[in-house]
Length: 269
Image 1 (cartoon, rainbow, N blue to C red):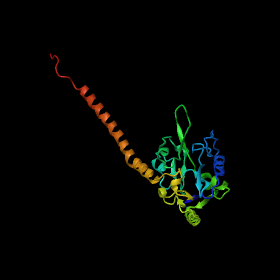
Image 2 (image 1 turned 45 degrees about the vertical axis):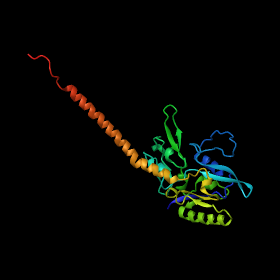
Image 3 (image 1 turned 135 degrees about the vertical axis):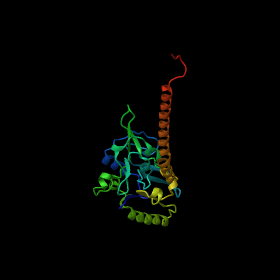
Image 4 (image 1 turned 180 degrees about the horizontal axis):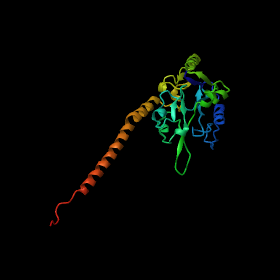
């Protein structure tokens, strides 16, 4: 059974209880921030911030309005990070989410480069050597594999975050989108049903996905690039290195053979 989260952003009040719960459960340190003129704090994902709520001031029917968006790992079915990870540190769990075995991470950063949502963050472990390891939302693997819901879902006081069977949540999301459209939200959308093969984090959006800065226009395009790079370009690069090494060996042997030949001329008695 594939599990998922359904996040109904039409109900979000921006309380950030999900942020606090994520920090507390995963024992993530506080991040020093400063007032940048908005209500987001912190203002981006980092190795110490695995989820946060984006705030956008808006206007609706001539009145001030807020547009909230909870962002974290999307747990894609076609995950670019899994595709390009050379060590298997990132992989699809049997329950459908993208799991992380951090001890296997070699710090290459490919996952951070190719993720269309900008989720994986590199945490520097040694300033001397520059060694780093990836950090991201784990879908609270330690909780969900022991019969508990993710910390963010457990803490949400507004009923925004639902956890359970993905198919059941999809149907619940469709019903909610239909309700919003009847209420006049004609652009209401169920996001995540098909993107990147289906996301493990689904959204009920009261507005078009284009209005949310965390959502790229073509996430599947990035996955196609990652797939092409991993399956075709990277092997070609390795083959090029092997050919180059073979050429150096051949050149070395040729020069050595030439130097070992006896030279013509000289005196003979």
